[in-house]
Amino acid sequence: MARTSSTDAEREAIRYVATLMAASARTAPKTSGVDTTQTMVVDGDDLELIAKAMDEEAATKAEPLASSFRRDANCVRNSECVVLVGVTGAIKKPDRPFDCGACGFKTCKALTGAREKRGTSTDFDGPVCIFDAIDLGVALGSAVKIAADHNIDNRLMYTLGASITRLQWIKSDIVIGIPLSTTGKNPYFDRG
Ligand code: SF4
Image (cartoon, rainbow, N blue to C red; front, side, top):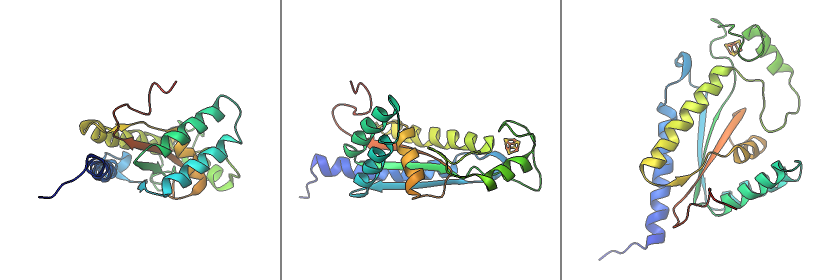
């Protein structure tokens, strides 16, 4: 008789759900039918690399953000797996610009020019086209729905994504990280 411990079963479940979340982010609707989304599933020793990067980011921040980075770094340490979802932020169809103005520039060409001239940024590498930001939100919603459907605890983390932008593990100008856990107490809420 084969036996799987609860720890191993839960670890396997999280990893499986993480891959489903990545797939769900990929198939989520994309504005203009152009996909600028990137995803990655991270587990094992690489989680500590992320947590360390978040602690390093904390050292560059003022309160209360510094505490948020440190608190979320510990959440990553206590997670089994992390799903990353990001977008490039570039205009979708340069040959058919919308010139909608939502990004703060009057034309798509002006946004593209500003992106080419940008220097060192903070947590994310803006400016970005609003349609990429919309796509990121839709992809994240699709991904966390999969986690919720399988009762895997999760949380959308700005702090985690900002640290990944610095690590450059995926080629995205905005990244949000989603840590995953299956413990008796959800580690991402009521953190005190
Ligand atoms: S948000 Fe900016 S770059 Fe995107 S379509 Fe509107 S004007 Fe163009």
